[in-house]
Length: 110
Image (tube, one colour):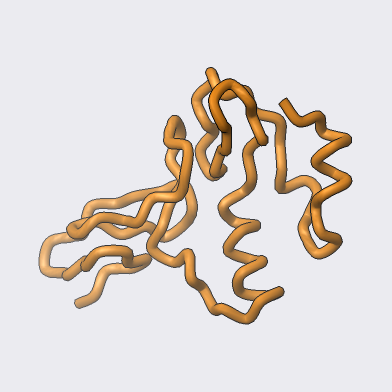
């Protein structure tokens, strides 16, 4: 498992160092984080909100993670499925009656 000190050495300066946290591969990944491991080796958990900020602000990709979420217990980022919308990195809400929610959407369409 990488130590916090090891990770701090490899995090680029534009990344909020508080966006990363220690995570054990045998623990559920916390809501709002993408966790990475290879076998029994944990590489920690990284904030989904920070990933979105970096893509938007540092690389100019726009909000490429809109319509995705990182629920507790899931290791990676999930696209919001059809029939629901994901307004933030931890929430999936069923599409209200009379609205349309296509795959990977962050708000319902009327």
